[in-house]
Length: 596
Ligand SMILES: Cc1cc2nc3c(=O)[nH]c(=O)nc-3n(C[C@H](O)[C@H](O)[C@H](O)COP(=O)(O)OP(=O)(O)OC[C@H]3O[C@@H](n4cnc5c(N)ncnc54)[C@H](O)[C@@H]3O)c2cc1C
Image (cartoon, rainbow, N blue to C red; front, side, top):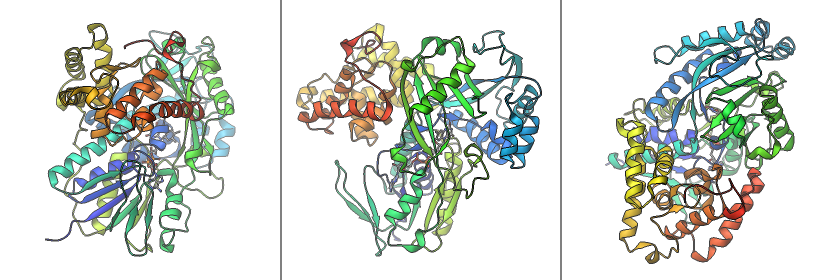
């Protein structure tokens, strides 16, 4: 029997994960290696929208917008627990502005477009034409068509209606947690590989080195030892790190290096806790222009928070080092103040910020502004490399699946294998198997009550678990029961009750073990930021972090005497990286109350 073909995917961002899943559908062995964790790059630093990209129409990217809209509709159908439709409000200053600027942009004259755009931005005619084209390109999915309205009427966002007397209303979608979407892509890939009987591995927190002998050496992590593999092909899906990966991993292979592919820009977001701003949104996403004409989103981020983004600043350093600076915070606060002058958003209402680098293609010279660089992806083959090697440049969350389909077809053809399956109609594992979200939440509530969660808290807990895990939430609760049957927390060296909840945040402690066993979580950072999404939780406290750390001890992921240091380290990371200060539960209202 012929040896199994093995393809290595470097990078477990949304693109690497989608490519890995697509390849498993064709029956090849896949190993995914990440230097950090799953979704630790741009995937986590995005605006979290699954959208057609209305503004790309101005740059003539009609094909990209069409592809994005088709994928938006598909992902909302195949991952309804994570991708949700969101109505958008696009405030407009006048009637006629922006027509000439849009025309200039369409023919690639960005500087002329900026000059013509002047102080008045896009008018209702320009916006109406753009939204009509958007409707046309999205045709067939049954989403509502756009409407142009006068501001200040009905239940609409409370935008300054003297400055912005008109608005366009249209629908796009929000993916609150692309981190969880990426994890589910890999969970699905593992399930597919198990059914196919093929090799599938995810190795995180690893360094890799490709040798002259054709062997890829994967270094050890804190949790596992090193290993070697002789791949048939490698896909470099390391996002904004693509050039750095080529230089570091393939340093001995002149055919793989030399050409600059990446020209990223840094983008920052604010997570704001301001009840009056959250209420003023009226559950719409607002898509507007800042004073300098750059696009700005003000979005509901769960029931209490607001996400504001983003900036777009050329960045050439290590993407892992990109941080939001005070100038960006001031710029985004000013953009909100311009739209919502009565809200008076304060600096101290910024709960945290985050920053990442867009993996955009390198463009020589400065012919286009950062906003004008294409968001289309490129699949670059390194023809002179010593094994079949491709780099993925660019892309969006929205098009991860279609990108993966193209990459899989390209790579399989190159290694002489057919495409045997596609993800076009394949739901993600938590997609509720046809059950409605309400049914999943109701099942979670029953499970929570059976696990001893007080009735008054069970609803919140059920919403939270279903919001993270979809229909897999039932398995989270059941895994808690399974562990308890093994002898309970004491037998596992865990001082905290497993059946209980993580203090302040309404998630079962059993979710920690579930993420360690089922979702490749190995550290406190992985759990807080990319599995349980607690780093954003408005009621996060030191006690919540300690509960996660203690549950990680129970799951075998942390020595018991490391808990205090791990909690201190994580609290420091939150402050350094996200500007977030975490109080003790006892430090005051809003800090850590809620479900216990
Ligand atoms: C500010 C901002 C806003 C955005 N908003 C949106 C949006 O609203 N909607 C949308 O559709 N798209 C958006 N995007 C684009 C989207 O986020 C990215 O295109 C997408 O996440 C890229 O995914 P990726 O998997 O290619 O890269 P990444 O998510 O960056 O993943 C790359 C992975 O490679 C790993 N890695 C790095 N070096 C190595 C190495 N040597 N070996 C192994 N692994 C390595 C990293 O740890 C990382 O996990 C936005 C991007 C940014 C930055």
